[in-house]
Image (cartoon, rainbow, N blue to C red; front, side, top):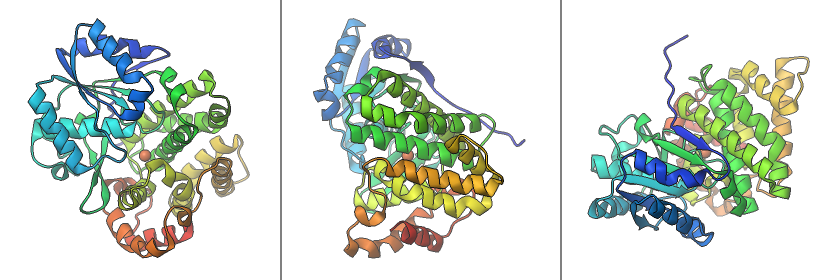
Length: 382
Ligand SMILES: [Fe+2]
């Protein structure tokens, strides 16, 4: 086996684990926390709850509320200015992928200077970041676990992947109780994102024995619990989705992703589309494209999805993909690109594919893919 590396944050998991946020910040030497969140989380009462917890621990805080969905380059640069002006010493994000990626972007600029574009790609952040404590409010993005940060480059209309080990936060707090205030749409979008992470990490060219079991566990948990989580909001199901998200994030953070995420970043950046909308549309089409390069591993996924093995790897893999399609169709989500992209914008697919082929996620796709092949995938998903 080739040399491999594996990085994850300290994870504090469980119902009510939010209460440990103050202690976590203290352990990292916090005197003044830079707290990043958004209005939705604020309205649900979680920001005030966290401020109370910090106050009880005797920690001062400064609140940065200006997080938007699909965080943009200029927003993290403004945030870094605000951070430096206020002399905080620990960055804490409370929210989904947008809040956590905004916090990571702020941390990069505040400690390394320059523009966020300077850090696009793998391993381009040179100086250490401020300590980070992340509290996820969704079960999917994985930004609380991963070495990934996704920021939209407004000028190019693309979501940049910034990947480096220093982006793994020091501590990730995962409290399933927080998921109860999430909408049905958000629960589905987050879970299918985690599912896409698990599938792509499993098939990645650099998957390892440390990431593969995590991928398969995540796929299994999401297939068996998402429907119930959406219908009943039972804490048991939400907790299982949280575990699935951690497993999937652990896998993709260390194994990378693939062509589907490369396309999702370019489509999402160009059309300002929610990340979770893309996966039910693109994932199985990309899996079919990758199938000839990794039939046996695709059959492993099929065995988990189908909960049985068929006569041949190819049969198991193909039926697994079909089962995933039926799974996506069982939710009220778009399944084709034309449902989310206006017909007159179809002409943009070519530049989008040319952009996607250079996304860092494409490097670990099991089958090398050209922009022309990406375009065929988009046509099939149209
Ligand atoms: Fe994702």
